[in-house]
Length: 299
Figure (cartoon, rainbow, N blue to C red):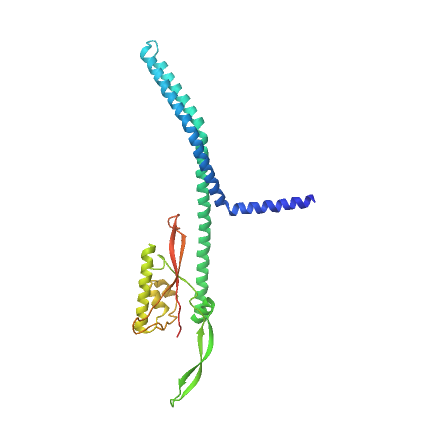
């Protein structure tokens, strides 16, 4: 029985320790808020006491000064010695009253700073792991493209597949017949492109401006559809100013101008998700990034 109790207590203690480590920033911040409140209360209580001490100090200085003016036997050495005693006594009394306030205030600042330090340290580790993982994944994709081609890379990345389809064609004599062809189907653009300062020169970094910019980019893509009847992925990435992505990807994905009418022309819309991520360049605050994709109809 007692062994089970000891084992259960050990497990409970381990869980508490793990949760404490996991939620350390939140706990430290909460403790910082509490100690900051205590600091304010202590400061309010200590202020009148310190004021009284300073008033007594001024009164003692006046007494000594008057004695120096009226008593001829009171030497300069004695006056200087007494003044030093008054200042020393005042400093000691002020420190005794104010030291606890300063100590609790220091603890509060330390807790706030510690909570922020832990958060940024964890974010830094996650960021480093993400960068390493992304580099590894991109290297893997490059090997797939080199060894097995663009089609295999799209298949692994986006889950595309080849399906056979019968289409009407004309034979040499001009008669219509059915011919079976292979067509790649699936959603190759389930993947979001990240539009931000690191990937595009047309990104401003101000949400209002960037929203307007993307709206204008949609109109530019629509003009390409009107002019050509289709647009490739690289056409759209070029409009977005994402030239590094163009170098990484083939000219895949043709869009028909299926929404065109005689009166309105083509319409085109991005599927946009906004994300706020920590700004590692400044060490504080967040920066806005756009995750963008678009629907296709493939040739």
